[in-house]
Length: 509
View 1 (cartoon, rainbow, N blue to C red):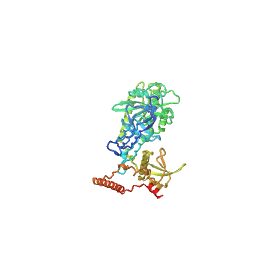
View 2 (cartoon, rainbow, N blue to C red):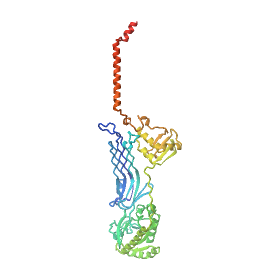
View 3 (cartoon, rainbow, N blue to C red):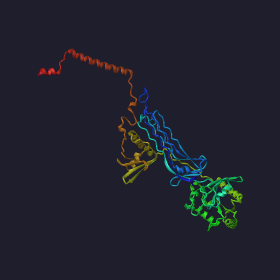
């Protein structure tokens, strides 16, 4: 088990989107050039990729936490931030991706198959992208969205046509070694095989794979021994071969009881219906009475063969050591595999209609909730939640922009219908990272703090430029005013009235 892991819990996090930037163009001889802030880059995705060089999930067992890179923030001069790089995680073919609740998310079959398990966050818009005829100089930018963070379960289910099942030390590994070029570990003690061994067998024109599944014991379907760890590797096999040890010396064991015990465990195991496989108890069966090179075992095999055939089972007496009966067994397995493949070809696959969730879903709900802290109104929706995540609440103009967006989306009207009044507690978003505020229906959201309408700069407004005639008229008016002032001063001097007010007051005394 140290070199083979077929089930891991993987904690993945996609990259966060880069923040947009608020910037004003500054260039010599071009003052107030307008907004030029760039957008932030997209965060990297986390993608599972089927890799032929990967045979185990051991790497993810030792390093279960994986994170993609973040997007870069934007910059001035309309420079957008770079996107984060996608994180590609190689997995073996046959890997099943499940959620924490056990729901099958993806079944990765076929070399090069991919599945995005965590999507990177969107990059925030810079003030250049937020500019409009009414909002010519935004003094804010949008923040990047956080990437998805999710825990998934990876299960490796071996892709094989035939599975060899049976008690420990029944000779399954020996059969694989003589039927194919595989070289599994073989020893004379139980549970020698700790990992499934795959071998490729050629019988006539048919070529198929055989899996040596570790030994099963009573109670394997409930987790005893290594049963639950490796029964999942039988789910994809169309043919099950019971390998029965006819030379066992354990008391209370015989071929018929061994077969009944294993059949009971197979019937108790619940396969994933979402993967399209039928129950294990309904798969094609072949019984192999092994170790016929031992005289007593040969006699026992000949004795129980009629009883097994009476059950409708195809029985073969073989010896992996003496290599007898293997040719007939190989062609029988090839025949059943060909029939299973042919049946799969004629099965009409139902048409799958994909209805992906809209990226710009404008729907939302407003619910009235009673909490220990009092009554709240919760707004849940794709757009409102995303807008809240993108808002820089330290910027009054950005908060006002959020208020305008929510108002246009109809959130304020929905709050009225839900019974909200001024001062009511409103929560936007799910329980985690939700925004809480006291609702004011007529709140202008910071617009009154600006010198002009929100998003405008009076310095950038088109001012009226006077014509040359108007300039001449203004100049002439100023000259005339100065001439009139000089003439008035000269007239006062000529009149000779230069006495100050203090001397006149003294004479009156």
